[in-house]
Image 1: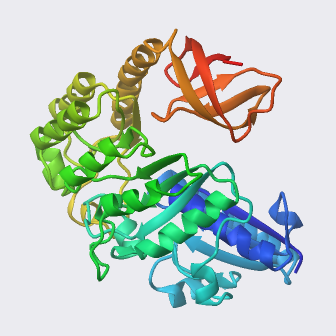
Image 2: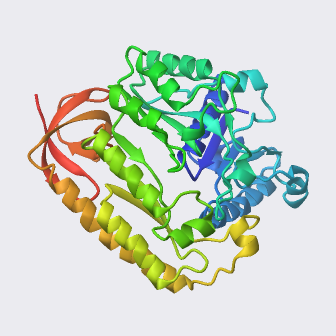
Image 3: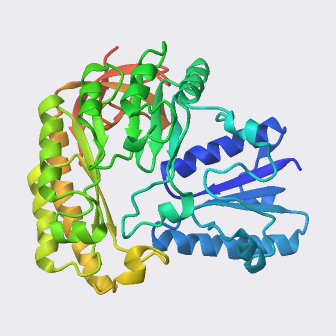
Length: 415
């Protein structure tokens, strides 16, 4: 086998795991193929968090079945959250697939010790670093605990060693990943937490920025907030999903906090970290959500004014509590209407927040050139474009912002 192709959809964790798979293939001397038709080994890294993602996986499997029929020597593997615990049944249902392995697990053709120490083959200036797999929360709508299992943290020393090696290879910013990153370390013998890990990473010479996601409002500790305040490399940008602005819906979702507690946490973050950028995740059309309850979500977002809001319409996931016990009774058209309302509200808020940055100077970690402009992000996760004939890749630029939209900023780099 000489060529491989990896198809990835879903979250940042999937992307990080695909990067490590690429490294495995590279170590075997294999080359990346641009299309599955050109490959000897194809891996699809799947997502089923939303029905749309699952439909894309199903369509891809049909394509692979045809490829396998045309080329029986083709090796096919499937991983990610589409793969459930009953792999024997999956093999019977999809006999043309050679390998199934669950998200985050060692590929069945690989030695476990080699997989644990694998790094991305050619990391960019930024890199994802998984630090905890799985989730213990079992939110009513979420399939993740059933597919990725219970929480399992990586040893602190292992993570620090990995990041040090990445920095030697040119990485300047890392994003620590976990389905619930705030739970990091509770299952380890020494009981370190995320704050302890941040302290260790902050001391790595050559590392410029540290991010982490996704946070859970009920698990973000005061210790973590105080640690963010005092560590200069930890970015002042936090993703803190509320999911709904109604206490009744939050209770049905099994989120473990109230709207009042969430508001208090946001106030504490803004008091301790002035200028912090906050992003959010929201689900509309959860079973039983009334128009009044939806309006509570709109009012929450309008009042707290987040930099970014990721919005999704509720999609029943077989096997979850909501799918088993609740009727999906909000019509699809109504879900779409509610989603569009929040999109419009958030576009206005984000536009106003970004417009306030026009005329200011921001530090940008430049990642690459995109459509003739240099592209990078501020420490508060704002996307910035600027034009320059100089070489900026992997460097920090001071950019004066000249234009702003709800989604990005554009300016001129200081020479």
